[in-house]
Image (cartoon, rainbow, N blue to C red; front, top):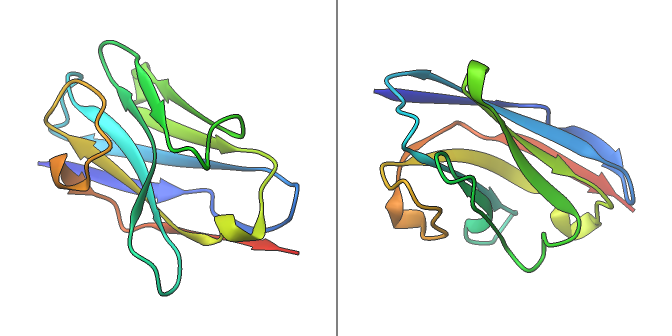
Length: 124
């Protein structure tokens, strides 16, 4: 069974940067796609960015385009989310997820494994 652990969250001023990491352990195949979601207080969980492991295709939410970059470390089975030019509205718990689908997907129900999340707080 795939296990995902996020790290790298914290407090940052608006305009700053944060790099989140997601380490995968257990039986996680290279054909899985990976994604990042976030959930702000009082709001539903939403898609942020995703990548298909084999094809390296990526997808970003409109709010993330031009500011966030999703990358992978193949040898360590780790995915990173570089977040630049952060805004207060980026404040949320960020979750890493893995899907049995090899192609990138933004659909929450397509993801089979989830991490516990890491808090990112952006101050004004």
